[in-house]
Image (tube, rainbow over all chains, first blue to last red; front, side, top):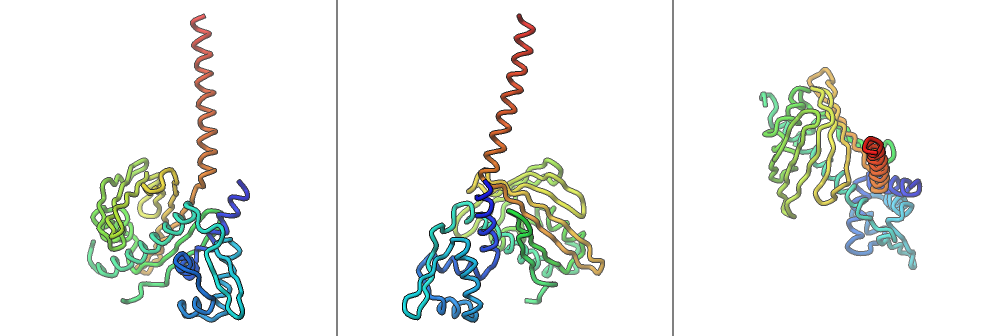
Amino acid sequence: MAQYSVRIDRTFAAVSDPTRRGILQRLGRKDVSISDLAAAFDMTLTGIKKHVQVLEDAGLVTTQKIGRVRTCRAGPRRLEEEAAWIVKYQEMLEGRMTRLGEFLERTKGSST
Amino acid sequence: MKATGVPMQVSTPAEREIRIERIFDAPREKVWRAFTDPSLVAQWWGRGNKLVVERMEVERGGHWRFVEHSPEGVHGFEGRYREVRKPERIVQTFEWDGMPGHVIVETVTFEDLGDGRTKVINLSLFHTTEERDGMLHSGMEQGLAESYAALDVLLAKVS
């Protein structure tokens, strides 16, 4: 139970960031190098490495260095069904807040 | 698009909790209505997808059920209102048809900032499967113990 909680907490922390969710989505399709990720997310190598490290600590990503290229792939745990649902839920929640903001902006000044 | 207030703040303050905070450029009364009037909910809750509000009984114990029609399919969401304290707080349960039994408790707080803006804080608490099963188990045990106690009483009477 305690171990389970720690695992879920790491997952939570790992997927609470939109860049890290984006990385996981990409790795679901194919393996990607750190430099490709940096380019895709318009970030520095150092910045993207930090994100990959968090995902690696959570067991969601593994990396391997071949020559000068470090490649990332989906980790041994991948996303369990429940963790995947948490990610999905959070995306929905953020989407809803954004839409609500747009709705309130659109109807500004009116009584509804 | 014009930015509305500060961007969203997302954090995970405790175990299995997600907290999202955002300031809206609208009075609290109006934000409250956006959360509690079905015709208004239908305009934003589905994130651009068609939303059918099948049930929405905004009161303690009341049931809600929304069906979202997205390009990927039709998804049903439902739960019950645990607390409705106008205009400052709503506590409700949230379940998706696709993950039955995985109940999330959402606490939405509406803060009047006094300048025509409103801060909305959404705190979501996930119950893990193991935790849920544990509760179910202890609940069953207790139920069983009560049944046996009742049986004892009945047997004492008839003997």
